Length: 197
Image (cartoon, rainbow, N blue to C red; front, side, top):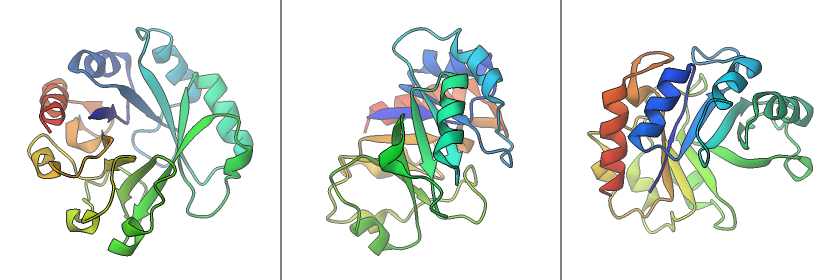
């Protein structure tokens, strides 16, 4: 199972996440988030990372031009996009992207197409890092092989995902010491737990 650790704000946490076994690092480009990072500050971190690690920029209700410029300036390889208000013209994007579904019901999950990868998070009024979980029964009888699950995950509850056959998991608050600062042991334990699913 692939693991993305999101909300990276400093080089120490980034390197510790990689040492823990993370496949991807997420950088939040949503200014209202306590995990927000300036694009050029993210770039400084990315330029010191070892090869073969995916860098992913998180965007909330942004136009293509903004997403494109930030991904270039911050050296992001992919964009993870919440587009509740239909700002983004996905077919016209010049960067790889994954859409975020903020699920509010079982129907939201059941209506997901299996044609593309998607990140599924629990709906909260604010965007991300709230630790709210999606009800796992919503995934019953659904092919989850192209889904990445986020929201309320930690080392203790990952075992509940066994049998869902998810492509990956995305964690932020579940491996933090405080908002924007990671707990290195929690990251190690989270990746170990994910690898046991």
